[in-house]
Amino acid sequence: MTALPTVSARTKLGLEILAFGAAGGLIGDALLRAMPWGLNVALGTAGLVGAGAWLVRRHRITPGPDTAWLAITALLLGAAFVRRDAADLAQFDMLALVGALAFAAASLQGERIMRWSVIDYVRVGVTATIASIVGGLILIGRDIDWREMPREGRLRQLRGVLAGIVIAAPLLVVFAALFAAADQVFANVLQNLLVFDAANIVTHTFFIFFWGALTAGWLRWSLIGRPVAGPKMEYLPPTVTPFVVALGLLNALFLLFVVVQLRYFFGGAALVEQTGGLTYAEYARTGFFQLVTASGLVLPVLLGADFMARGGTTPQIRTIRQFSGLLLVLLTVVMASALERMRLYVSAFGLSTTRLYATAFMVFLIGVFAWFAWTVLRGTRHRFAFGALTQGLAVLAGLHLLNPDAFIVKTNLRRPAAERPFDAKYALTLGGDAVPPLLAALPALGAEDRCIVVHGLVARWDKEESDWRTWNWSRARARALVRHQADALKASCPTKPGEQRNDH
Image (cartoon, rainbow, N blue to C red; front, side, top):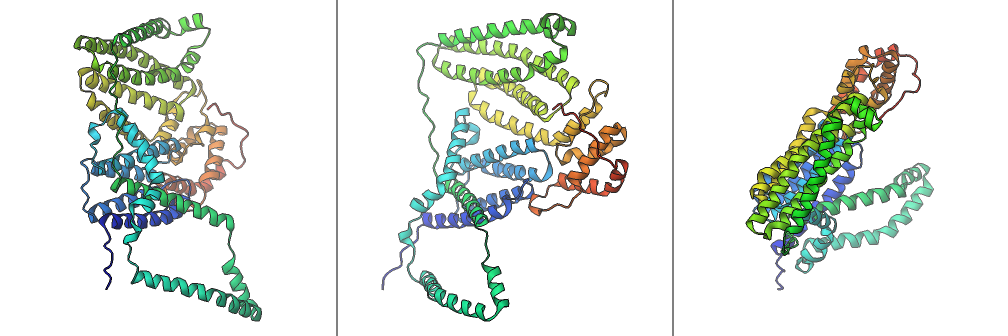
């Protein structure tokens, strides 16, 4: 009697990952094709994390110390799609969700997230993305040893079933044709059963393979893959003098800009209009985003200078860090100028999503630079990257608590109409979170703005939710509020208003 081949633990794990990949493809096609994303993302994330947890437990894989909180973070980010209805915020949520899943995969491989440098975060993000895309092919071609599969038992039954289908196929065609010719009702039933949309089938097939490949690839990378070593940065420059000179010149440029800011920007509107030929609001409008970009570019410059100076003598390293500290002091004035410009910008032109998220990014940079001064400049560079990551997650959580779209509407409504009229048309482009403050503000709006808001809200929200997969709490509340007041709203503005400006 021939002994049956033994299926190795690696092949068993690979087969189960492949099965979850197939299930993930079907579920992903069924859930995630519906837009805009809502409940479907939460369910998909929970399913993916649950599959990973089940495989870890079943195969007695020891997860890293960071796996649990990263999995919880991924679940919370998936659930965020059910709570807020803000398009820009959803993009940041998705970016953070992809990052959490990539870092969780690395943690399952045994890496310690808290010990990573900035380069490691980039390395893990890139490798996890590539591995998730091509991992399914590696799983089928290398990880699963198909020679270990038993050739008897269920496999023989499966071959029998397939052989029976092949034998029956021509018989089914012949008898179906005869029955269809004999009975028109039966012919109609067959015709309805065999009608298919080729484009729809191709689309479903693509998404099944797409989500299935990503699911299998991520699970394979998490449970079977091994960390990819980052590039060894062993090069030490023979001298740190070029970096000291570069930082010194950069400090000189920042100092010149700070002097100009202290005289012109903080000097008042009269001085700006006299020397620059711009109004104070225009002066603020033209500079904020450039200052945000400049502030963001300072971080890699400081990190690079500190890294390249690591082989220098103690006095040289101290000089580099002193110059870096001076640059941070000057940058504080630059960032204060940027925030003041944004305050004037919003006061003159109102708040928008771009202005709100740019300000949030500036707040994030302030925290990161403070953390840089506390860690890198004090000789504990290894603590910087993880602290910056947690600050990014904290800012994202703060945006969810702030409720961006509702905050934008409330801020613009509080501005005196004499300075800048409320842009009702722009407010209607925001998500479901903007609906409650808009409805509450209707009595205080002018007749034209009130009718713009009324007709816009009724046209967009006075309808049933078409797909449960896209369910979102804010969108559901917006529909309920508008539908409840629809008759009164329509009666208050029976005719559509004319075209409205859109300054945003």
